[in-house]
Amino acid sequence: MADPNAERDLASLVVRAVGRLDETGDPWEPYRLLDGAGAVVEPVAAFLRELQAQDRSESTLKSYGNDLLLWWRWLAAAGMPWNQATPAEGRDFALWLKISEKPSRTHWRRRDGQANMAERRGRGSARLQAGAVNAVTGKARPGKKFSRTSRAHAETVLRRFYDFHLKAGTGPIMNPFPQDRSRRAGRANEHHNPMEPFRHERAGRYRPRLPARIPKRIPDDQFNEIFAGLKYHRDRALLAFWVSTGARAEELLDSVQADADPGEQVISVTRKGSGATQLLPASPDAFVWLRLYQEEIWRKGALRGRRQPLWVTLRQPFRPLTYHAARAMFARAQETLGSNWTIHDLRHTAAWRMAQDPDMPITDVQWILGHASLSTTQLYTTPSQDEVIAHALAHHDRERQPRPASAVPPTTGYNPRSLDILFGRDT
Image (tube, rainbow, N blue to C red; front, side, top):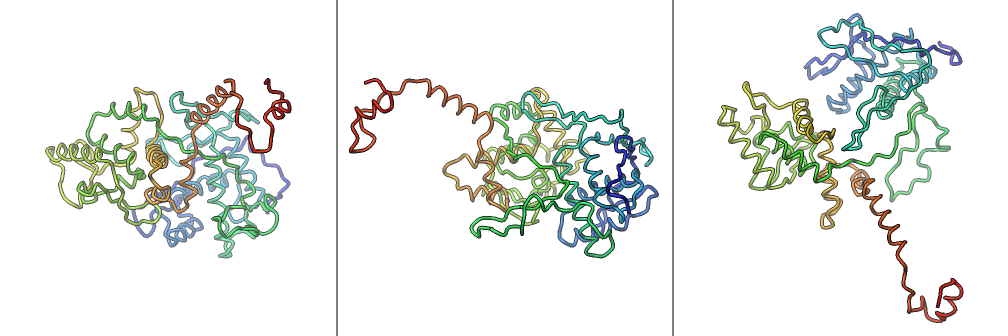
């Protein structure tokens, strides 16, 4: 077992691109982690089977598998077996994620399984270079370092992975990513108010603290400019549905032609988390653009049928439109504006517009967005930075204006002349 007090030279640690996460296409095993020799990593396979049995989606399996792949590569560079890792390795891994640069991805044509994944440029470099901030949106581009969100996700995945093997008796005797009980003394939620939701009062020892997230919305003038730059009816229909229904990108792209009901002005989607089918109301403009797109694509020879995909490519052979193709379309539409909005920002924009409507209950917005907790929906009632600054500047302007003396006393029984003398007001 490693000495927890021993210092590992993380600055010279070289993590190589050994192994890979393989997408099998098999519903019984959608993803499997392969080591450098091409063999299946059985501890990870058992954990992914457990997640699949817990009704986790395939996207969750892929996300967890990528974090475990990074951990396996780091263990290989550190020369440590997975079942002998201690909190010392968890500490060093968290520190490596914080300071090291993200591994460079090798192009698939040159991928040989042994390419150098990350080379430290100089010993002890501590430059935490963040991504450049877009002047239009105020959103930072991905930087060379691992983001706080990525580090927090990796810590959660690895802590759950080792918790699973601790309970099964197949892992180390101590979780390398333990919880930090010093952040909250006593039993968790020991003074919980039954009228309020439970809060996460325990966190991982090496989990970074995340800043409060305020969803960013696309301003109306920028959205109109992006919409005007679209070239095809399909793209206009997609944006109109995303910004009016608040559906996630994948939920809308998975729709078939029978899901759209122009008569009732709703579209049926399959929710990402629960897998439930839900009707979402959409704007009339969305169905107008949808009809124009369908007439255009059917004349070109696209298949027409209730079970046929609703969104397809514009050129033959017609194939279902993927998320990556839709994201590339949305990025091209923003080239003139110079912004870096994402498709998910359209969901934030739809949620913000509905939450700002005084005649629409916040519980209705929660139902449309599919949020399990009302507190998540209430994030969209938080004012943006520009709104707060505008309100504060208006407050300062009002403070500069002279205030007329009130002729009505604050309450009965007080002499206005006495109050003027007390507060030093001219009479």
